[in-house]
Image (cartoon, rainbow, N blue to C red; front, top):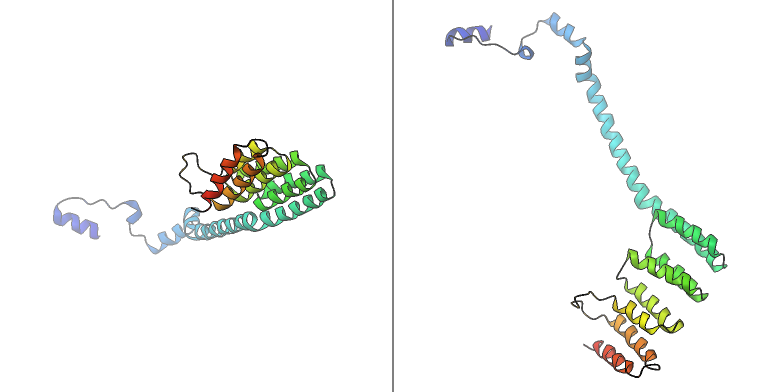
Length: 212
């Protein structure tokens, strides 16, 4: 053998690992019939392909569920709940809403529910929707403007309205002034001025910031 010849030349015995020994035709045929050989050469390639296909299918199905089915089904539930609220069936409407948020959070629907409650003078329910929306989207301008307007115009709670509107800005005061927020703050201070004359100066400052 090659290993034997090489060993004689260098004066050392070369041991060939068992897996590299040359097999005769009969030995090879016997090896082919073993379970391990069949598993390695026939079963495993097929199984590996099947696993890859299943993994890709599962990933695609999960993506469809999260990005297609869940939002669409949530929209359906939101709309059903909204219809119930329009007909003053608040308990039924809340059930639909709670089911909807299990599938997908929609800022637009949070605001739509809050606005409908406000139009029906269900201010506590409207507050709940505004607050829940701000938990999901803490600096949502649309939510803060609508919430602040309700507290100022409808509930005459000027201090709370200012707190809500001012929360748009970061605590370190590094955020640039926002036109719509300052307009709403100025309007709130102007109403507040009927109770506290000093608030007219606050209104002037907010309006002047809009010009900067």
